[in-house]
Image (tube, rainbow, N blue to C red):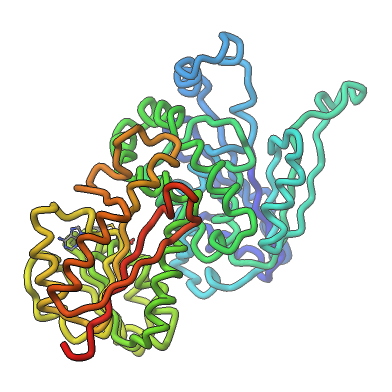
Length: 463
Ligand code: SAH
């Protein structure tokens, strides 16, 4: 399996800095499923090519093929070692991780500069309709796409061509973007559901897709095909190849279920819309998690003061990283404050905001603690506007792969029907001097309603 990356940016040998690999050296990396080699077939001022060659260990792969129930022959004779697949993504993130993340110690400015880049994949499996899908995936992102079918056997052209294509993608883009596109889209193209190896796959899809996936015309296809891999077979491979990762996989079920609906993005859009309509400027996100909403708030200058609070220091750390707090210009940095706290303890820092958001947080709190949350949010903080979202339990029957009566996430203490949310929210509103209205997020099902429900509380003028 071979990926080459080429640039004609001058001096082209900067590619070595960008990849953090020396053009004069051949480097070898051990991976759980084989080895990766990085070398530079050409490296001069005018053009430079880096090659990432994966040398897979067929025995490591066979063990997991056997569990998938493939026939005896398919276990040993298959295209896995040769074609670009999810394993390439794993290798990209392990071997070219800093370039993928847009980091470059020696030439930081290069990492954010669009360069003329060309990526070639020696063998990409494109079965029926595959070339159309290839174009549909890469062309909207600005790539010129070339796909040439390979001969089954160059010695016998009469045997015809195989499903495997040599694919070249050209664009002026940053290396980090190019690698991110490959990371997500190569496994989407390879429809075999093999060997997804890694932790937090859904997280990764969302992180690597940040900035483009939410706008991609085929985002639903991308998410569905990417995440199909996540289930069942992928878990087998995880257990076989990286047992400790398999365990962590359990933490992401909710996003895995919901991602094909792009619920995360839709929730953020819906909440921002409510905040804008209300003219909120000082906004606090309670249970901000890794900062999905904070990022959208930062991008909009009308939000002059933004605070994020979460009970989990780890989530806050990840939020700080994802928002690149350290790299923000001082004026931007001054708009944002992150702190650790809990929704169940009164806290003076929660006061003084126009609006508070509780996005997919309430269901993580024990029902017995809800009166405390009510007191903290509607008694102590008491902002003019409270926007709250939570799963609509009725919709759960529409999620394939969620057993009857199961919740979307093991940490959910409850999930409410629309009537249950209304009962609680109207009670709170009545006791605390707020008005409340309800809305749905995501495509509503005629029977069971929308996947996510939202309650919007506005403080009454007199109170
Ligand atoms: N609002 C974010 C995160 C939702 S996940 C988003 O929409 O992406 C739920 C979050 O609530 C987690 O980050 C968890 O740490 C946080 N949380 C759970 N109980 C909490 C509490 N009592 N106080 C504050 N945050 C809490």
